[in-house]
Length: 219
Length: 219
Image: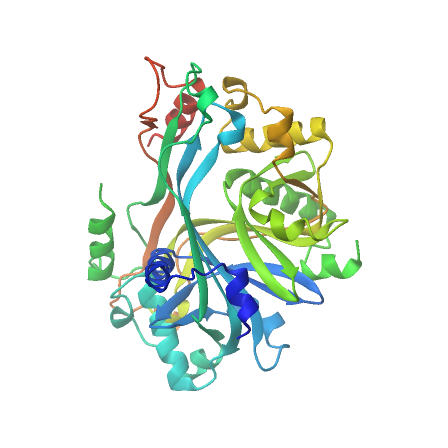
């Protein structure tokens, strides 16, 4: 990978911060559910949301939403994958100092299609387990036909960068005495009560995966 | 704008559906807080999160996070702006039929920098009011110096397309009798209790903008 990528991503020069940044970036990545995949097609940029999972230093993208375009790009495609977690509104005394609290990670590189059946099954498992840990073993695994109907892309996590903002607004000194309320309004992803499929047959209890997620999400 | 853009976005041929789709797409756009802006720089795709607002048929992007790159692209930049709202997990009986409920809108076009001071002020007001209606009139407006330090991009909403999924999982007929729990787990953006800036001077009450938002967000 060219050095200018690292420069563009503004990776830290200090190794100890680089390690810290990488761990922070991976934590943001692991906390998201949807990523936005950017690629170039027909000379134009495109950004498509999709699901993903991580196994070590590889990011797997559920590529089916992109498949019509990506299949025309043999040998892999340059992508930028961005994951953003909105943590709240930052309300300042001046319009100019308004902001958001957030965590985001940007991954750049060349994504390639996973074609081997066993590899693809493992990648799909990774994506399902990322979205809902424990789910894979509760459900019917994919058939070879289903696997071949699914597009999965793999992207090495060689070039990633995280940005974040947290905490109170930072008004200019001259504004701090203004009689204007300032502060944060926290935001997060909330999980509602599960809605059973009306077509469920018999009395099927909530699975352990959902019970665990609901417990973790409880206030 | 070239016709292939409309084709790529799969806009409906039926005018009555196109109207319906446009209204639905604008509703998704209006419900989001963060967009992902894709652009091409150095021959590579980049995707950056930022805030935005809409005034009629114009999308305004808070371009400051992108400014270093965008300022080098005189005369506007081709962008793809994607907004995604995650509405829940769709848990099926088979791994293959797992999905997400979501609403997303994709806008493509050429974004240009807003340079006139008055226009930029109006665009910033649009962005602040999008994030928190009523906030603009509560705070100190930007000075000319602050305005010139802010980058705002305008993008005509000429080419947009919405996609959405809702409802229960769609398992194959042969899977419906499997003793596996299936259904939806709704997800949404939740709003927490406001945290006043520790530097607030005196007893400043919560502003009407935040009170209104908290009421709207209450379960």
